[in-house]
Image (cartoon, rainbow, N blue to C red; front, side, top):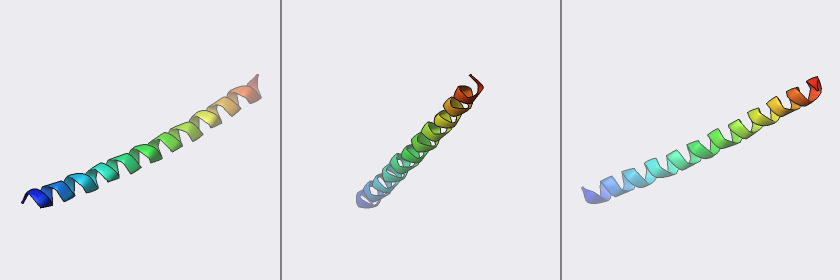
Length: 42
């Protein structure tokens, strides 16, 4: 039973890390778009 939990925690941890990386990339892209919009106004 311990091996199953270890495998589950490992897979969930990898999934969380990949998800956070995707969120980070999307946030950086969105901030870049906002900066471009502000730059176009000014």
